Image (cartoon, rainbow, N blue to C red; front, top):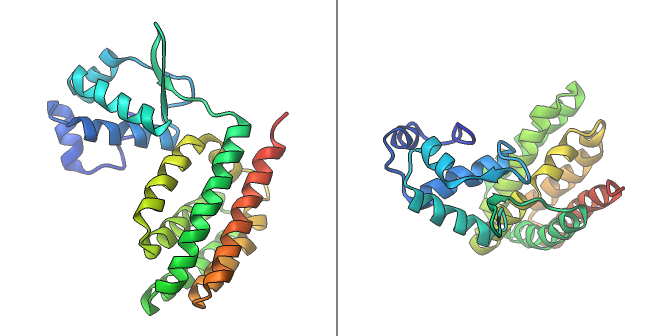
Length: 227
């Protein structure tokens, strides 16, 4: 079933007996879209989704409405719902907005970070360096996601976190391509290390600038992919 591997055994068991709430269905669909299991322009037929997820069509309808508000799904007149496709220009805008929000999170993380969290980020930096040395793009991509998530969590900026999650979901296919570009990890590694260094040094201004520079670099790469 698309997108459900990240969920608990309890949730998967509830799928099999059709007791999921609309919110839980939305979580499953959101995860499938963000992970790339559901692709841009893919039709989302209520009856098919109800059968796949074992949920009522009413809950499927509510879940699709929620994802439509988030910008992950669009409804087309007389054709139903589909996964929303994002253009290169929009993906650049999304990344630029992320840069502002994640710069705020990096600033706050630098103010709040504890000694144990410093150790965690420093170990993550070593894992990222090792992944680049080994040419392991999958491990590096995983560490990249962990780093951004941990800085957001350390910052305790819940409003920013919710908006970043939504924005990342909308531009996921561009992030997927970027992560697999040959040589990209070697380019982004110094940027990530600069973020970690500034956050761990309790330097809010440097942390914000490092994060802004990194994500603006990502936006530039996405922009250059526009034919």
